Length: 160
Image (cartoon, rainbow, N blue to C red; front, side, top):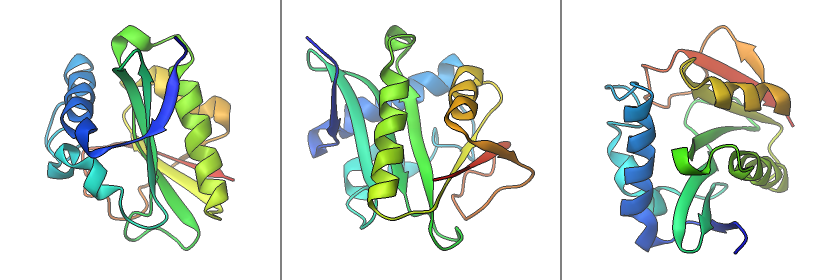
């Protein structure tokens, strides 16, 4: 069966939170000031009910493989959206799942009329950072907006 990219459903909350936190543990970035300790990680369906946001999941044979979305984070410049919750299960890496999720999120941002896409990450997530650079994201010297994820120490911006 092919990989399915679909919007999050309420029934996905627990499984996607578990997948996201597993990635944080795997890369030893499971610390305060990240998505790992953010209480919204347990209720992503509800978080993404916000206008001008969308959260995509990758699934194969009913198993969640990854996630990626866009969210109008408070404090971002006008016309800018944040790329959020971009994680791929260790079992699905190298299969094009991340690329498909990122492309779907970029297309969604353009559909909503955003001009720029911002993200926060960690150098430890080097494969993801490489994907961001290939997609045209440029490094920033400081964070934008008020995500609350103060532990992140890598910031990037893509002009759409």
